[in-house]
Image (cartoon, rainbow, N blue to C red; front, side, top):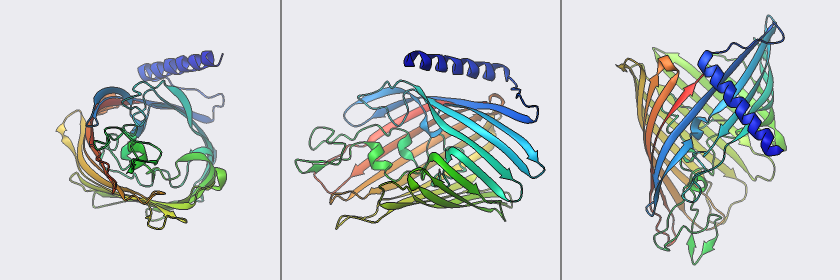
Length: 385
């Protein structure tokens, strides 16, 4: 019965997506005062990966901006108050951060992403209640390059399920940090490059408040499930045709966590197309091993955007580099580096993007392991409505 219900849900949503994309159906609310919008996107790609021991092609859903569908409603309850709600579901088959050499087919399923209501006061800020972004969500991923669909500071969202091959032991080692024959291996890209998530505390059930914007600055604070709390300072401003966006956030994940998470990023887009982006994240650990260090990552990107190269839309290219150091429960000095090149072509008339990218993951530590580099190439398309 459960499978039947899931199948009906998927088919219904697919029909709704198809009809909306084809004919731009206008939704009418049961209340004439309420404005309702249907939106969504489909984002599919082909990825080729080589871990130095084997290689494979994958057909994936791009987790940098996954396939989703949403329904947003809002009503002007008063001259200075808008009340609204959002229901957003995401759907991925073969998520780009989960596929691996041993699991290239992962069945798709709908999952709730945002289910919230909000009260937006014109002069007093916005209050949001329900499942949605904590204040620190995406705090390390501010990016004006136009290429973040291919590569951003959360590098493991593409290829995170791939495993490092240890040439010294002739295998892939252990994925749980266990020492085997003197060799320590955090073999999975996700473990090595996403211990400090670039998404901050992400999306959970919470209450969030955003202040009005003053001189480009605003503050957000949230309290969520398992006593999680966070706060973020945001800035967005334009001067002489140049755009600067930045955010710094602190978060307490709550639960049994013994650390505070700090995320920050900034992106500058100059009026002639050159752009610079930087991201940072760390865990401020309360309890560390005697010789341990706080896990930390630093990320940088240089890009260029041009509106005149092709008449179909903006062209964006970039290169990026990140260093990801992970503190562990063992005396292991581990460092991962991620290098990438990105290309995105807008197709403005079709509300679409074509993209391609290359990424190389490298991992080293002070054990006897000899990890081979993992390289991947991805090309795909996203259509939004």
